Image (cartoon, rainbow, N blue to C red; front, side, top):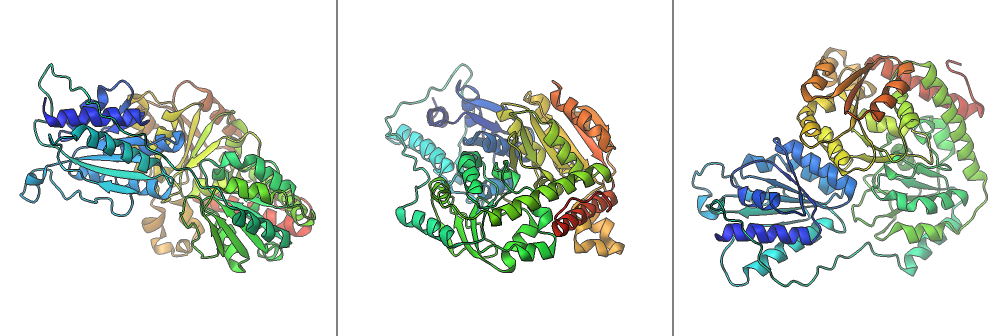
Length: 571
């Protein structure tokens, strides 16, 4: 049996023993030894994708949802470059990926051989670890080295912090075994890898946070995106009850009763924002999505304590005076024991109730726009659902319009690099992880950018509801200074598509529903989510209605925040 095939069987067997359960494979020749070994291993699920870019984002979504490393495999050449955007997102969002790129052996590099490019450190600094072991050889101790490589690569991907690992694996021919030969993995004893968990805070860190809260008169807790934020739910509720306003975006998994859900709209009112500046900010999770929130935090910086177990330095405005690299749960538990007068928290709670009511009335009475879709999804999504939210307008709409609830879905998003590429495939990877229904909320440009990804629905038996916010192109630019340059705005920024989304649905075998009135949202979305078939729901509205609807909501919140009493639409 050729050494290449013994390596592949042994390497894959060790990956399975170390916990790998899924691999996304793009077909190719140079990767054949590993592809065949994966396909023949009973413990690993193989998901074949024709398009490397879509396949890599599918694996990214699967890893985001499961929390386990997922492997990607491709042949040599530009196929490996197609993985790069997903690798970047995985690096910045702390998602565990094992990226396996097959390669030509050294003697076929730099000599004009077909499909041979420089794959050394192809992904630059966007990986936790990179290694090229060279072509497999018959050296003594080979099986032990092969198994060690597999176990270390998976451990490095799992972290902490989690992230992508790249192994570049050159293979010599023959790339497939002789017919009838089934390579067997070679045994080798290895000590079990020891994975270190998130470090617990010491007494000094606990005392620092408790003392800061005791001295603060106007503290807030700001929670950004976290995949595992739900584990903090109890202590965050206790903090809110102890008089600390909690500003939690949905992807933190902490927008729960007692937290402030309308801060995005409240902080757009400059006078209200100025009157409610904090003197202490505790931050957990990723950098907040909301621009008004970030501007408010940076305007007159308060003492800021960033709890950063992933060592990601999520502090673009350089506000943090203390960065604590430890598990936030013990720190926040200690902080929740520091009780304070209720006045500060009561002001936020009252303003939040009034603002949420004003938003509800304006959304109901105003034109159809992103906020109406978000409010509808909040009403119709069943327990146990997952909402994968696209970048640009969708993630901002969910942040601005999703009310605090005890029955939230799990929120996931590609907010590491915040791109619009690969969002369909990432969402379908999330759906493939299960359980429960998955809704993918995207803009029209995002769907167009990754339409190839829809093939995974049929190919891998995935079911999902794809909701497209069709505002006629890059609607987010209508809220930015570019919109004032009318002579170039449409061609350079709005870029309307004019796609017939019913044709997209038909091409990929989805059911289709078109919604153009707010009154139809609940019924259409509820039916699509309950259906046994995947459905593409297109919600169509103009960019003008989107801008008009958002501005009416902000104005309504400003009125009630100043008056202290609800105001009807248009008042």
